[in-house]
Image 1 (cartoon, rainbow, N blue to C red):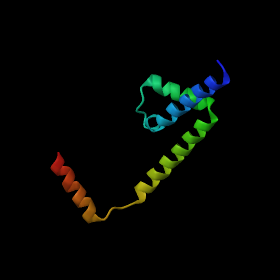
Image 2: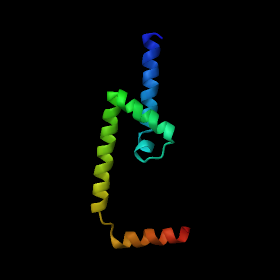
Image 3: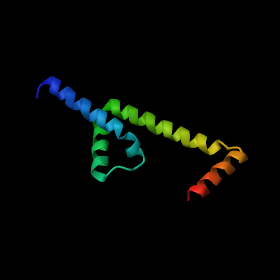
Length: 86
C-alpha cells in the first residue's frame, strides 16, 4: 500500500471514529463498534484529543444543566404538552 492509500485509509478511520463519538460516549454502539472506536482512540492522538474535548464539554454541560432552573410557567407548559402527547 502506498502512502496516499495509507493516508486515505487513516482519514476514513478518523472520520468514522469522530462521527461515532457521541454514540460512543452515550454507550449506544454495538460492542464490536465500541471496540473499534476504543482501538482507534488509543492509536490516534488527533481523535483522542477530540474525544477528550467532547468528554470535557459533556461534563460541563451536565454540571450547568443541573444548576439551571426553568421558570415555573415554562415548566408547567412543558409538562402540559408532554401529558397531552402521552
